[in-house]
Image (cartoon, rainbow, N blue to C red; front, top):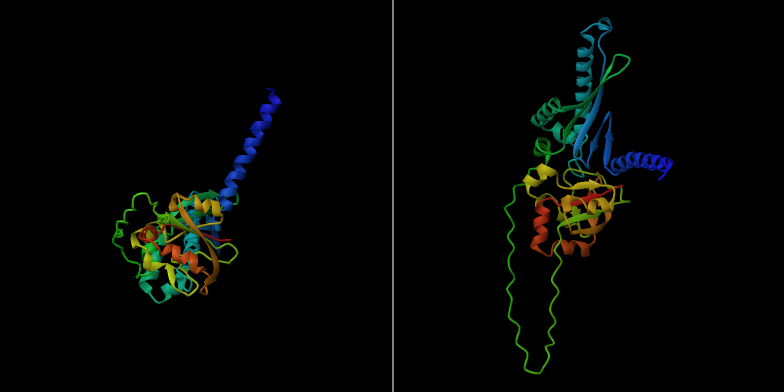
Length: 295
């Protein structure tokens, strides 16, 4: 093979790799708030801050530490703004929730102060840029998720009572057909593309009559706190292959959204009946094995 051909192949690979990385990032559900963002796909809150030292300290050893401290304070202020914009459900954001509870706001502020610095950059003009992040899950989720989400005991499958079919008479073929067994689903994927659906920490899936099919009453707090009540993606295939819903998820199409925050999704009564048909489905919902695909 000629050297020029090898060089062409290497260049092609180098061009493909950044594009692949960009594609993955492009498929993530990211909501920008002020100088920060909520990555609903990764479950991360992130914000940047910029700081500079006072002019009288320019060129002195104290300049960088002072600029770093100022940037960190700015990043924390911006991150607090991001946390206040997190949608808890279709009607409430953290800011509304915290206004009525000083203890909640104090605890959220404490979590922001303990956020991790994931990047710091010293710029040529003497300023410092700091990026801080914290998780949507864990302590933050424990704090803001609705109290009605409780620990759920393991769901036990109740074996159906089977009646032995009568034996056919000799020489006469049996006319009794075996009933097909219902398919066992390992998760739920809700296609809400085109509905202007918005992510939330406690979304609801409801049927056409307004009855809840999935929501806070169906999940165990342990799973909701650790990984969120649902995952979010921008691509159907990516959602269906997500480890969260394992190998055989039921995919349903959203019909419309409900609530002022557009976080609750209506599905057809036919799809809703599939979810209500077996205890196995209650089991995967308890474990929050749900993915929602949004624009």
